[in-house]
Image (cartoon, rainbow, N blue to C red):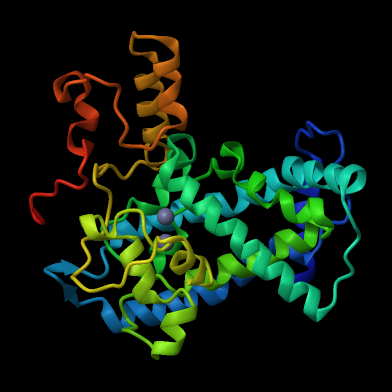
Amino acid sequence: MNLLSTLPDLLSAYVTSSLTPFGGVDPHVDWRDAFLMLLSPLFFAVVVAEWLRMRGEKRQGKAVYDWRDSLDSMVLGGVYTWVDVVLVLVFVLPAMNWLYAHHRLASIELTPLSFAALYLGVEFCYYWFHRASHRVRWFWCAHVVHHGSEHMNFTAAMRQSWLYSFAGNWLFYLPMVWIGFEPKAVLLALSFNLAYQFFVHTQWVGKLHPLIELVLNTPSHHRAHHGRNERYIDKNYGGTLIVFDRLFGTFVEETEAVDYGLVRQVRTHNPLWLTLHEWADMIRDVMRPGPLGLRLKHIWAPPEWQRPGTQAADNRAHASESAPRPHDPAHP
Ligand SMILES: [Zn+2]
Ligand SMILES: [Zn+2]
């Protein structure tokens, strides 16, 4: 059985049997739509290699691998892969196709050079998607899932929110469609970018050659991104490159030992609650009585924002997040 040919067919059958709010699923489902799914055997092989090498190891007193934590990540990632492909085919791609058909500025032919330009453009969009995901509560509600592990290994890369497309991550890539790149090419460039990012989630690799560390997002830079140490909060947003962080002032070098996880750690193995907890917190904050403008500000303000005059006791869930973040007893 040839997986390369059967998986897109399977997806096509699955998607066309789903609801289609735009009324028009692109009938040409092909390997590009399932690129990350097709790479999953490679991802699993790399996980096994890392697990064999590092299963008994501890870093800063914490095991590199915790089977329960990795299982959580793989359940989240496995469901995410299917849910996201379907949402993209049912909703995101039709929306992008509509923009491309009716409002594009130009028609950019795909050549190796134009694809390189597209990749750079997608990386730029990814930087702003990722920065917004940390600094706007609405987007953080989805992205928080990725930061939920207190361990760092390749399985952490699989920890993704099922609600990314609902939150609107795809809106950040519309400029590339608008200027004239085909939607499927934009999404493929993004898939390549995400595939690269799998490989930066590891403690197996130390620092690489200074020239590589200068330009690319590396395991070292991304370990820092996953840290809740005050020094590392909201830094190193790049996907493949680290140059936009250097340009826009969000770069930090990995120097001190990284304490992985969330400032306000969620402790559950329930994949539904891992997906929904921050949405629930945000809705609860919005529902608290007060002026409408301040209530709605919980949606677009940074995750740690509190209403003026709020006492920590009034807002216990955020008590540990009142600035400066973080307040982790292990790392005062
Ligand atoms: Zn992040
Ligand atoms: Zn990550």
